[in-house]
Image (tube, rainbow, N blue to C red; front, top):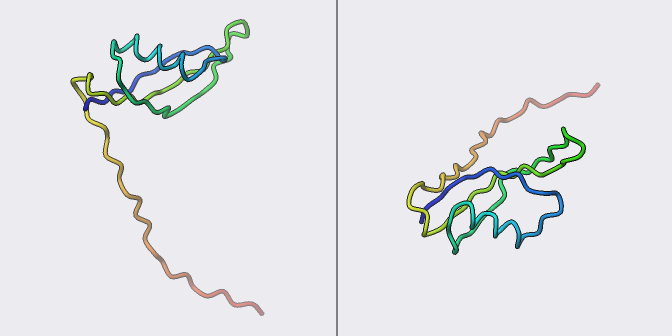
Length: 86
């Protein structure tokens, strides 16, 4: 399975189906899974407002790249000093 992260500028009224079509056309693949990693609104030009999406795509048709491994978050336990109230 290949893995790729892409960045897209999408109109504000997009649907999941239209997003799937755009991803498929850009990467020239048909069968894939995707996850939106970040989403921000670009409104610098008031006449053209759009979403900037960072999307992780996983597919057998993508030949390169591996999905990054997620590290477990290790939070050390610290004993706190007791607080005294007078």
